[in-house]
Image (cartoon, rainbow, N blue to C red; front, side):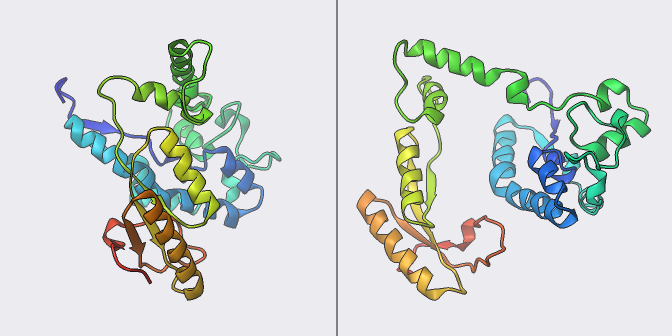
Length: 259
């Protein structure tokens, strides 16, 4: 905002809407239903995974952020494209090679760009994630290794870079909530993240409306774990169907004795 920037455009959602991830290519070979299910799930999880983070960062920077690829009309049209509109590994994607980059990805969007008159530099640009294309993660890893020559930084391997960044004066992370859905996996996630210097604020125990016995057993286990680690326990009352997308609204969390 200090530089006069008031509006930021984000490309978030393009991968889900136009099937740009490699998993979408794999699902494409299984037909329309598998492709649509994977893309829709990604969009459903985006609010908790990406948008809340982006909105917070934009507010801190004093700018407005918009998402052209999440426009309702655009997303609706793209999500109703058949699987044949996307590149599959078996070569039956139905999109000509000149409309795709050498490694494929978001073929329908590339085709639109070509027909709109965009230069080949745009619609044939190779797909590469920013963190890999810039090699930024490799630079962080090198700095982390130099900071601890001959020894590994504390914590599991996946947290070495994070531990280095968090060692910078003034760096901090917000507290986490542990979603306690199983025994060993939830406990393992807690131990791994805590060893990476992440702080936990509470334990969340979900309930399943269609399985009261499972809810009771899961809650008792979560209750015992929360007491052992000294964290408050929150109970998620909202019914979660077997096919529902993961995600919990803060308003649905209440500190109660249990189901």
